[in-house]
Image (cartoon, rainbow over the protein chains, first blue to last red):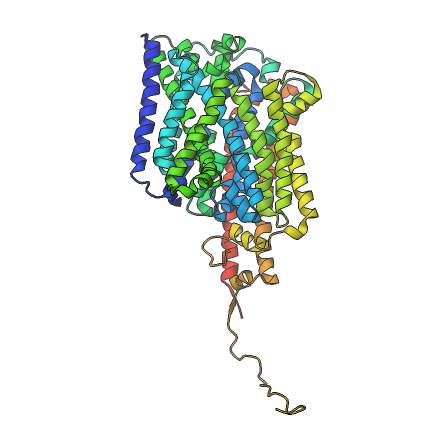
Length: 505
Length: 124
């Protein structure tokens, strides 16, 4: 065994063990079904924000962004910006009211707000779809990382991640996951920050090559190439990421672990800080890769840039150790994001599918949750193994577009507009889902043709989000007699501070 | 009692002498029109604040793609040896987001405090 595989192996094994140990430690606190789902709603803002950050920074953030910047240049900086700014919009429109609604998942919120089982079923379906769409690239990233780190076959990474996540989620649920996720944010930050600092020193020691080159316009201008089409793609990406964050099922679930609406806001502000610090780093790797590792982009292996760069720039044992640290961070990224997604998906499954199927057999809520977690892992794992060639950042980007076109209108109108009806919500969800879904199918199936139709399908958010809003508002207006009678009482619950003694329905 | 007999006795009373203080939260609980006005004012304030926050974001960050589209030479501008587009998009954006978020949280909490004060005042 070479030192190369040894450091990689040690990194992967120690992250896995640390995750399991912290998960088991958390298990001692988690006793009831409520602990499993929402940590009994008692997590403090700083810890909760670390957990949200740990959960949110996925394979796409840790590996994808640097690789995209290396290949396509400055316009790819919009990805991390959008992934952060999404939390500002979530903070401004959704955070406190969503917490105050008292619901646990997006389907819970929709049902409580609109009093309709049909809306609930539609939302459950969308949560599972978005969750799985987001899980597949996590499993892919794990395969790529393990192959780069220890030369493992491409299927091994997904299988390991799936097993560890399942063990962790079904043993401790949300409470232990909160500790695990918080730990993993700090691990991920260290794993990018420390090597980046060393690499910048090496770069300065080499006499800062590349900094005085004439700017390459195709690479350093922050617009996708191709005139108005590039402008459309950039703005559509902005719409998808800014508005999609609030509709991601694993992000939304986190808000129920805050004690009240005020804490939910403070948590979100913390998250903005944590993400802002983290996202300063991937572009550094991208820019250094431009100087030291340009051949990776030419070879189509830009996703492994973060993993390879320390070894390319620092020869010997130092480089190996840094590379091991980065591998550990990457592994933490897959583990934490997949855990959060599996929790969200299996929460919905256990309430709406398996719970109903198993209810007659006197099985406890916790056992139902475990069965659901197994289903939530198995399906995307099978897809990842069957289709090993879907790009990491591209698939994640599509999950954002679908979330922005479905749950974003539902949340914004449900929280701020009294006129929303159940029929309006369902038709809007279907319209937005079909519009953005067409983009998903197009990209996964082919996505190679040129011209405006292809551009519109490649990045659908700029038209599918307004479409969903228009349908939701229009149909609600037409069915105004169906506005639920409890709407005003529900608005009191969403918007008034908890300290006031009010009838909240 | 016979037909056309004495009408039923009616007790004639004046308005109650002691006016029970009515809390404004009671107006919201009973869903009176006044309660609706109170709730509406809180929601409008919070929504306006949220829209203002996003508006500032759109005017600053959201205008950048258009700026670089209209004037691509902007990225030739160098700050400390780094291209302007990288300084803006890779660095300065994040403090801006945190600042906007911080300002929003402060004002949203102030709106809620004002609302709570309004509710605790008693009409006599």
